[in-house]
Amino acid sequence: MANKISLNLISGRTIQQGVCIESGKEKPSYRTACGIIEMDPSDLRKMGAWKNTNVKVTSEFGSVIVKAVETTQGPHPGVGFIPMGPWANSVISPNTYSTGMPTFKGVPVTVEVAINEPILLGIELVQKQCGVKVG
Amino acid sequence: MTKTMTDVVCPFCGTLCDDLEVSLSDDGKQILEVYNACVIGTEKFLHSQAKDRVTRPRMRQEDGSWKEVSYDEAVEYTAKILANAKKPLMYGWSSTNCEAQSVGHEIAEMCGACVDNTAAVCHGTTLIAVQDIGIPSCTLGEIKNRADRIIFWGCNPAHAHPRHMSRYSIYPRGFFTGKGHKSRKIVVVDPRVTDTASLADIHLQVEQGRDYELLNALRVALNNEWLPDVVAGIPQEKIREVAEVCKSGRFGIIFFGMGVTQSLSKNHNIDEAIALTKHLNEFTKFSIMPMRGHYNVTGSGEVLAWQFGFPYSVDLSRGFARYNPGDTSTIDLLLRGEVDAMLTIASDPGAHFPISAVKQIAKIPSVAIDPHLTPTTGVSKLHVPVAFVGVEVGGNAYRMDNVPIDTRKVVDPPAGMLTDEEFLTKVRDRVKQLKGVK
View 1 (cartoon, chains in turn yellow, blue):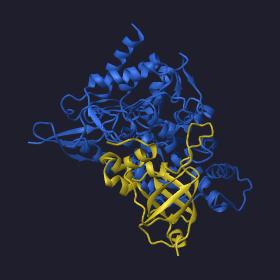
View 2: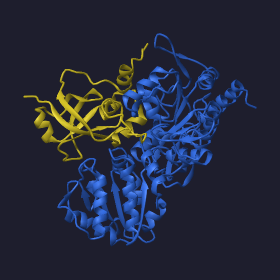
View 3: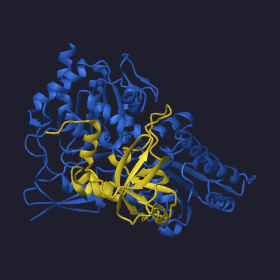
View 4: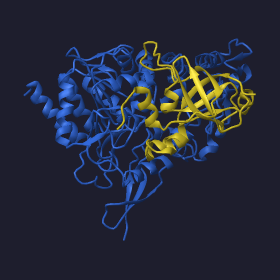
């Protein structure tokens, strides 16, 4: 049975993210590289989902649909990792605590299965959230 | 016969590799192959050749569609929104050369703008900490030739700075490090078992966000004082082992990244990391260095510092330079809704700012100067494509250790395209007219 689980979210670079920002953020490959959440296998089991399932990640700052993948840089139970990009930044904390720096790492989130929800392309995701009219 | 250009500088990350070789077509117009670069650097050079590249400025229309405009029209729009704004923001600068940055700052001074670079979401907290207590640092060359204790704290160069380890920090054989990686002990501190951690002699899998405690515990261990059984998820025996490894080295270095700058304790993490470095110098030689991301974010800090006295988050709106992160920093300015026009250059806040800040960019008159299509161009009113610095135009850039390196031009940009510096110079001249500056 699918459950909603709580994770501590961090974001950061991956080499695939680096390649995709240089090869074109308008392309689906950017979504493949960054529209994901890397999770520990034990957390996937807790959530009751197979790897490569679409999930909804929610924090107090927003929510986003990404693909839950099994981490290649684990184990890290309790920690979720979304590569830096618009998907991560839809849910991370903008609070700077007067340092100028948002809190990109260490954001409490919940993750739940959202198998029928689509994962948007990078530019599309930002435009949609900003209400930009696209012709 | 194809030509090969040697000693090409890679314009991707702060490692600023200067040993690339690029093979060109007979006429010197087409990049065929890139040698010695990492996969990201290679992609940057090859993608500049994309056939579907946008080569002329585009203005967003009422119906949301793009309309191609001339560079002159783009200059006019940019100059007007900056000159007419009460508090314009000029953000980015980290993927362009120092020459363009300098021209941009002239515009900022005339318009009373806030100027900020990508340190705002990267190593800004490092800069605060450096101002707090200073920084004992060195060059990457010294590390290659001397360092036998390497600590990667909250950074993952295997992914973010792919050639850092082979050129400087783990593998190279230097003057006093002739056995290469065998002459070095590697410690990685990261809440994940990263690909860098897999190369380490010791990996401390710190609890996320508890770096300050662990840094402090290492200082306690250096003095052989009492420690709890476990600090930040690490057993005290392990902490004492790492302290001994550090003390026993001849020359050590702490490289640190977003793991410490972006977690909750922010600049205080760096304060403590620098204090640890200072403390280690009571036992041996130790240095510390931020792993800078964009290839010329360091240069932006340098140019801002020598022109205005501060390395980022500079507010010129009162006619003189003010600096107060939290007040004059980009994210805070946007979240408070204080900015009424924005110029973005050589960076992508649309992808890398919290979405609540990006929503503000979408609301105001905005220009994005970028060779690529990005989420920032996707929410801006005007997109100005320019030549790739380091590929289609040279210029000065600063490596992460503050060493300036001149990047090289490899091929011509598509016909009629301007560089960052050329476009900004036109904007500067137009702003001068609008403001009546002689």
